[in-house]
Length: 185
Image (tube, rainbow, N blue to C red; front, side):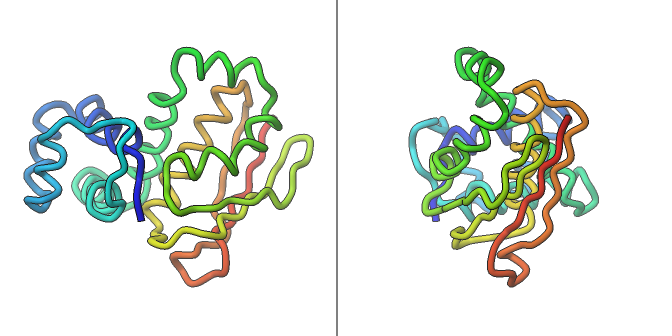
C-alpha cells in the first residue's frame, strides 16, 4: 500500500513544531535506517511512498516516544496534516463550501492520500455523518486515528463547531469496515 508524500512530509513538521529539534532528533534516531534515509532526503509531495515504512511505523514511533504509546499522537498528527494540506486556496475552498460538500468529497479525498483505499458515505444528515472505509489493505489503529484527526480538523476548517469524530469499527480489529461517526454544530 502507498501513501502520498504530502501526508508523509507533515510528520517531521508536526514533531518539530510540537517537540522541537531535540524531540525530532530523538524520533528520527529511533526509526529504522531505511525509514530514516527516506526522511533525511526531501519528501516529494506528489510522490508515492510505502505506507508501512514511511507513515505507519513513524506514526507509531511518535506515539511511543511522545504519547506513552497512546493513539493521541496519531490523532494530533492527522489534525496537523489537515491544517498543512488545507492551506491557501484549499482552505478558502473548504470554508466557502458546505460541510456536506466536503463530506461528499471523501470518496475522492481518501484515495488522493492512500492507494488503494475506498470510503463510502453511509449516512449524511444535517449535523451528522457515518463513513465506512471499505478498502485499506494495511489497516492499523494508528492510521485510523490519523484519518479521524484529519477529518476533525477539516470539519473545523469548514466552520463546524462542537465536532465529535469517533471510530466505532475498524478493519484493523477485524471488522468488515472502519466506521467513522461524525457529529457537529
